[in-house]
Image (cartoon, rainbow, N blue to C red; front, side, top):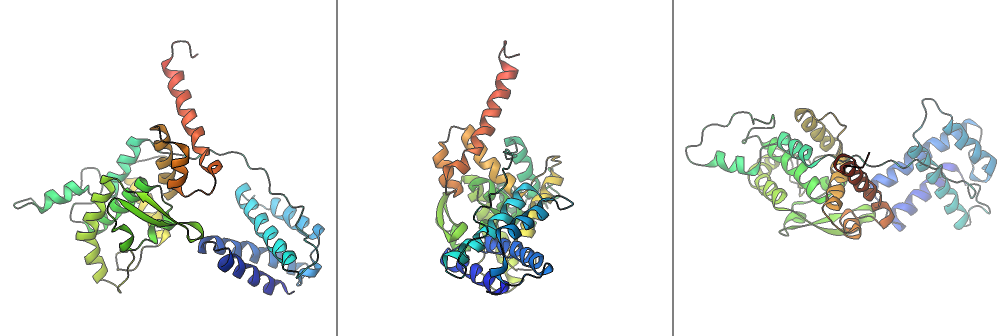
Amino acid sequence: MRLDRAVDSYLRHVSIERGLSENTVAAYRRDLAGYVAWLRERGIDDTSAVTADVVGAFVADRAAARPPIAASSLARLQSSVRGLHRFLAREGVETVDPAARLRPPKQPRRLPKALTIEQVEKLLDAAGPAPATVAASDAPGAAAAGPAPSGGAAPGDLIGMRDRALLELLYATGARVSEIVQLDVDDVSHGDVLRVRGKGSKERIVPVGSYARAALDVYLTRARPELSRRGRATPRLFLGARGAPLSRQSAWLVIQSAAERAHLTAHVSPHTLRHSFATHLLQGGADVRVVQELLGHASVATTQIYTYVSVDALRDVYATSHPRAR
């Protein structure tokens, strides 16, 4: 089978039959486009011509690339290639799987970076006005609001209200940024719980704390109606300045800007708030399986990485507090 037809068939399979997310399918598509281009440079345009030696040479070539490819990216690339050839063999397109012996590189265990509770509070304050501040600005006789003392947005700033609600929700739920920007208004209309559609379109219910709920209410009543009038009607919860649905990239920039205003020197990304959510729950005594459910992890082994963070925190406390620790 021609390479392009084989890749198209495999991508339809993982998208429709396996129900993988759009982001995952897009990552597979990028990886396999690079694989096909590499094969064609060597005169190979049919899957029947791909052997185990060819697959091994491709992986070795990618591993030796300069600048070097991150171990996680190389592992994902190998997974894409392995999945393609396994699919072709299983469907009877090819009689052998040339990637059957391909094993992903062993990756070093990297502990997720989490902010302290104080750093999270600084980040939230820098994103936009607290709900109580907005309410105070609505009071009769209230003075015109100036810049927020924290360096965040003024109480009347629509974008500041949106950004505060966005970050409050990310930290309160531990949801992925892709899950948050895909929320519709109806998804947050269930009181103190949130319906999240995760990887593979699997839904889960996550509680929403009072701080995030208050920030959402302010955004929904004060900011979103005005933002919505600037663009075409859409059910999406978070909107951009022109009324279009907020993208993942825009959400990332919102967090980066808030981190700069909060003078946080550590790298802060949307996933940083997810890591902080899980770490703070475990440090507060939450069961790891409860955290697994809240994060939407398929396996508890994925969630257990956060227990190492908590153990490290315990070691730090012990080292600084016990008279015979050192």
